[in-house]
Image (cartoon, rainbow, N blue to C red):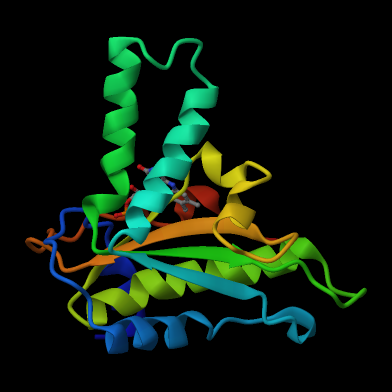
Amino acid sequence: MSIIEAIKTRNSNSVMTGAAVAPAQIKQILDAAVCTPVHHNTNPWRFLVIQGEGRQFLGDIMVNHLEKTMTNPEEPKNIALRNKLNKKPFRSPVIIAVAAAKPDDKKAIMIENVASAIAACQNILLAAPELGLSAFWRTGSFMYEADTAAALGFEEGAELVGLMYLGHPKKQMRPKSRETSDAYVRWLE
Ligand SMILES: Cc1cc2nc3c(=O)[nH]c(=O)nc-3n(C[C@H](O)[C@H](O)[C@H](O)COP(=O)(O)O)c2cc1C
């Protein structure tokens, strides 16, 4: 398949089986993920591979954040919301948390490290289907809380950019009809 074809046919197939993903496949995907452009050689990509009971740790972080937004977390509807959220990480056998490290180099700037880490997220989405896997990108306001990246063990100043859910698709999705660029382009010549 051509690269353009792979980009156009990729989709966020979120219905996965519970089957584990082989560590060698995860490594293959991460090795592809780090093949991004990088300014000032900052190598900003940071990954935390979450699986097994690690998913409960992530679910608890999500729920703790949600609770802070609730006046009464013990209200039945709020208990239901918390329980629903707590299960989200169990939608897939693997979640790769992706963060951008803060640059040490004075010339480097954070937004460019974030740009490179985000490109790594897209590489994950594109690499997964080639191995027969499915991947989708999730975030949520909890990710941008000051203490979330630290709770997941990322270094000081790192910013989370994605939770990449990864697993075996239950069934293939039909390719989506994609937009063309026409409405988003201007030319200066
Ligand atoms: C940075 C980023 C964060 C996202 N976070 C969420 C999210 O938290 N929840 C969600 O339903 N979709 C989220 N999405 C959108 C999905 O990942 C997905 O792209 C969208 O559902 C369209 O499906 P497609 O990838 O098949 O085109 C996010 C996308 C991006 C780029």
